[in-house]
Amino acid sequence: MPTERFYRLLEAKRQVIREAAIAEFARVPFDKASINQIIRGADISRGSFYTYFEDKEDLLGFVLEGSFDQMQELCIKELEQNGGDYFALLEHIFEVFVEKLQETRNMLDIAKNVFSHQENVRLMGFGAFPMQNQVIAGSASRPAIQWILKRIDTSKMRFQTQEEFVPLMTMGVTTLLCSLKQFYQYPESPDVARDFLHRSLDLLRYGAYQN
Image (cartoon, rainbow, N blue to C red; front, side, top):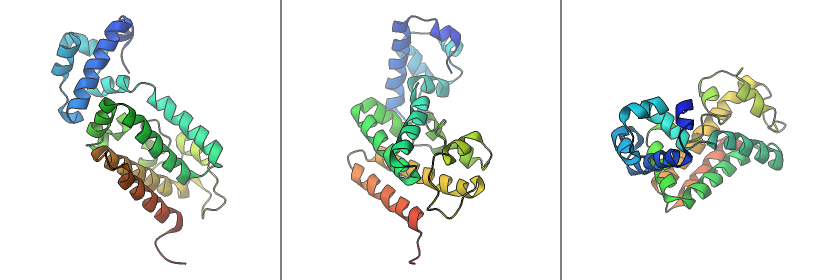
């Protein structure tokens, strides 16, 4: 999170820094983004940068500020509307990301650059997504897993416990991330990524073997 000193800046100055960061994050892959380029664009010193942000991950978090809370709100609303269908939730999140990122070319480029390295996916808003870090860490006792399990209809599934649900959550999120990465790489062909998502989720729903 940005420091208190950063938030004491005038709104106009904070916006200048944000715009300089957006320009740089959209220009090159995230690991190649230059803090020097950002501070030149924002007309601040390197020393000032580090009194505002811990590092460029911290700065990207500011650029994407609000996405974490929005992700949780999106999950709650969609699960309420679809009757607790986990797979429908993943499909809905894909469509939301495709729609929102296509609205702004810079944000689409940022998404593409961040997703170019798998370890950076949390920076696009998945850090607070209740199917990501807690699941991959392998702990079924984390509050986030309890949170989503309470909202999912498991009546048609072959399990009921949190421990049994963790692998499905992991595979579902991985499928979603792979589909989004494919879209970010080829944004002119969203149907290709969408078809990959639907086919993959179909395998998770019904399995690979014929009944």
